Image 1 (cartoon, rainbow, N blue to C red):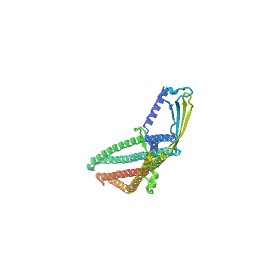
Image 2: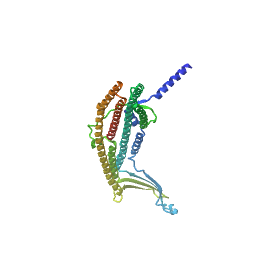
Image 3: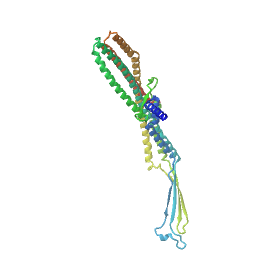
Image 4: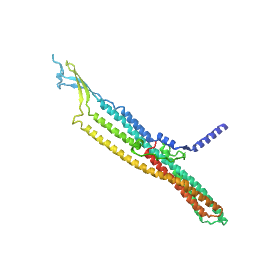
Length: 418
């Protein structure tokens, strides 16, 4: 009995530990989960499979036609019967017909149908690029929020020191109370911002869970390491963008598909051969008879070729439309990428300035004021002002970093970084 109780207790401890454990995920793990589990990936894969399966029937022939019935049979049924040496009139006919497709038409149809799924593959990659970069954005925003929470925690400790020190000095008649209430209000504001940032982290967690195709309430943490990319050596011209972006590759495939469709329309103008065989069973002494005929369809005749020729011309203009759309998109992406890179380089320079000069100087200023306050050479309101300036610049730095990471994600979205 005691052994069973120990086993149950151990089991309860393990369950409570594992239920409270938060998995730590890196950015790459999140992105891999999206690639494998998001419904849009499965949707496109099913659509691609559907098209590939349909393409297997591209070389099908027209179905054979079989008929049975009376042939050249008089309405007067008395004439069906033999009269003396004269055989009866009328026949029962069985007929079969088969058209043979033109080989070049079958080849054109097969190439066209096999190429159809290629467009969907590139569309899948383009949709996946959007999902991946949405995930990167939420991930980096989470990192920034955690950095802000660390700053707020440090601020809370500083403000607690100010408040306790001011209360002690005021009791001993060594200091004025004027800056005390400002510090009390500031600590309330810090707590309010903590609540806001923690709620925003929950929001990012829910969004990332949704992108990974998981329950929105699954708890996990993220690896807070990050790096700012270097785009300085990239040339955002048509060659580079065409090699990177799936939506541009999709348009190329649409153009290719349009030309293949033209080939099917041209092949439809080629003649088709066929054969027809009829066998007649005569009434009352009539001999068995047969008919065998070769047939040819002539779709290139002027009155029957209008639709195919119109489709060929229409598809030519459609291909040109796709090409113009692609050129427009390349120009737009190129301009956006160059503009974003210029702004990104500016943010990196500003971040270096804040990290190397502004924040260290303000931190030293605060430490000097704190030392002076402890030695009774500075007043509380001067220490508070030094802290307030340092706090403002630290939060400005995190906002600059947030903007830089947003630009980085936008650039990676544009160039579809693999």
